[in-house]
Image 1: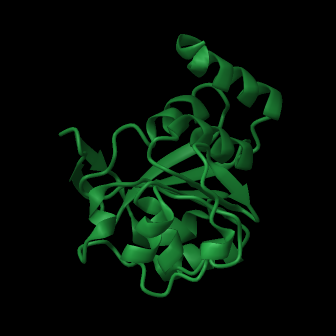
Image 2: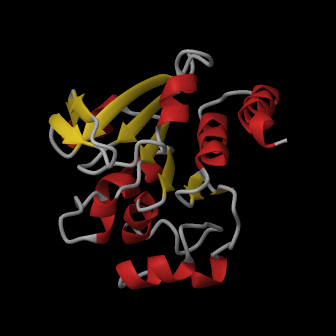
Length: 190
């Protein structure tokens, strides 16, 4: 059995940031993916998709995922962002890989998970502006690709392909298969 991958969605989640993980992780690579929201129920994406999320965050830790993905969205830049710092820190301490893309990197920074590892985001200033106790500037990498370090995966919102590849690698998908996936998704840009 492949790893369990938990995807956290919020109101206003970014449609393109979870799709490659959920759409290929389970069907093609055998990962068990589940969606979680602050509370079970309906959330609406940035693009207007209404999604019924069957699981609340109170169920996430008990499910014991090997990978926890925080999907971005504009809510992470507001005071309405759910406080999931303790949940993320606990899951990481218990051995899970914690991944955040775009605004989701703010949740990782608020949990203190970016202070001692190489990471990226939409911009260094994005983290510094929205997280008062962020202390990881010396480990910030300005790169168009996802960064993975010590079971922490981060990416800008413009990097969903390399983010998905790093998340799936953390879930146990072989690197050769991930190389094929990335080549397949990049073919139109060749």
